[in-house]
Image (cartoon, rainbow, N blue to C red; front, side):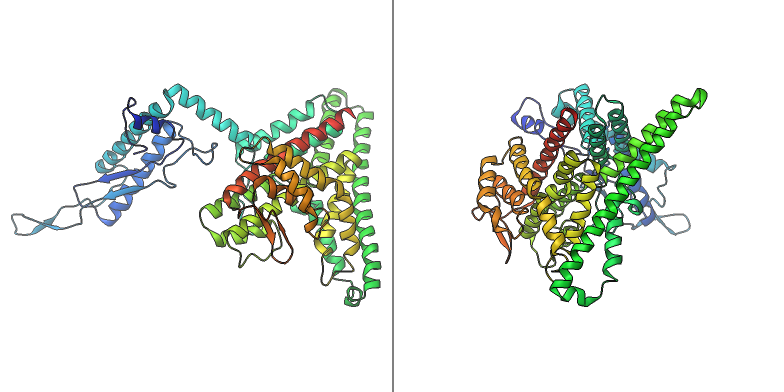
Length: 519
């Protein structure tokens, strides 16, 4: 079972002690033939007994510290039984009898023996290896609880479906409760309102789900853009003068509409809160005012959260690494559509890894650092305005049909990302000092020398920095090649980039909160 027994005094036991995880493999041999139904029932009893043994000892999954191991993943359970045969035992009537187990339900003696045997042997194997790996059962339980707490603090890690429009599974209940507790903790902390709103929004991003699609500002902006584009005549897109002119009007209209709508929404919240504070509700006055203040504050948190996303970005990158490690290339190709619009149908593993790292670094700037930067500079409306401008650029700011119509949006997006993109490169360098196997100074050098190779004046900075500090080559055929001296990226580089991106986001948050609190 679990791991082979060994003497703690010999050298092999020292190797076992270093093992962090293992598999629970069970082999059951019966000397009596089993019918087809009995085979299935016996196998189910054995798996259930393994799960019960793991649960009794609190054995946790090595991949997810929040979940108990079940012994049913990469583990195996083998049931070996003789085939049914006719034995040569004749009864008095001369008939020949068949000797086999026909049923093995839970209340049969045979099933109880199998279940008890598997449970006891698995429990014994687990206890032996707990002693070999941890020294004592108490130390094992303390490490188990610590691992669960660390997994809880890591936040939600949903299994992201391959295609973007498919629903994302919700987070486990412990993580949801942790998110709610953290948000409430920030609310009662002695912080400036803008700082507390930012901290709570990042906690929401880490632990809780995205805002509902029906009220998500980015989704609303996208639907509004689609509705307007469907009504614009084609000759406007084909004419450079008309296209550019209408593109300017379109961009100004979208920014004005959503920013003014956001301002009106925030003012309405503040007005409602002021009205409640001016009224008297007797005994419930204090409670009602506190509830209104909390609701107003939480709504602002939700509005700010809708302008950025770091946890989902990092989760997608992490899942890309898992697909590539398992050589699930088709799934990895579909997953890449979450990160970029590149055609993945012909991409191989190194190219998929490169596309993941490029998108992770670029979206770290566009999707997290830049919204935080404009929130610090201009408040909630600054973050909202940036998100709308970035959405415009992603929809119409590229060559082709919308080249002239989308040029104003593309250029405006370049301007508002000039500082955040370079700040992101600096954050990546600082974060790399916390991650083993990276080269922070090489990242800074490559970013300084090769950032201009990209067509965008901003995207090259975080991507070139990522290329240098990870020591990999990131290239898009016919467009750019960053870090030519680096090796081809793989899933290991994605995992390292994931850690660097998480540290970068944490540094950005700390700096932003300090500015909001003391400046």
